[in-house]
Length: 257
Image (cartoon, rainbow, N blue to C red; front, side, top):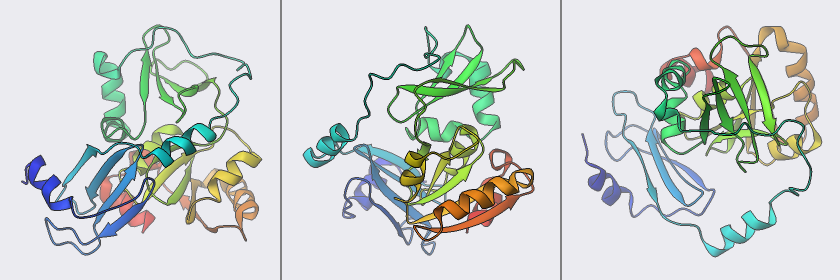
């Protein structure tokens, strides 16, 4: 296994801009186009898709002045008051074994540890909360069977994007979005609602490709969503036999290829 320093030295010559993703032949195992490397939020992130290799890591490379300017310009108006605010006294999932067990069971722990999504835990509500990219809101999953199973908190405007890839995979829930992000060419995108808003449609059209991966019982919703995106971005629909968050790495890779 290559050390972290050896990985840094090997990948150092590869130059990318903030938000850019590249697929290359893995310099560690030789796999053809199996290495994904990207720059997101000032971090260089890499991952070999080949299960027998498994090389992955991240390095803080800092934000450029242009990236900082775009981030400031893209901030939403925070004067709008959310209906239900974020719960108080949120803590790290690492302090709560039940939260870590849940994240492991739905293939979401890697996304959290790689910094692709901020996840909090509410001890009072017993909910694991996947935070929105701007940290102004999130969606919480009950660990004690409370209804609703998923509940939105704060400002959940837009899509909950988890990942760095330029292929958007539209999924049912936040855990599935985190599971998809195991592949660096993909970004899991949870809509967090029954309908797609104009903002969400605009956000999805900024991707190179969109894969709509919903359950079979949501076929009408999937086809309606496809019709709203066709002509603006390359879009296809995949009807699932099993929820994405339960799929193994290899099963997920076959579905998304």
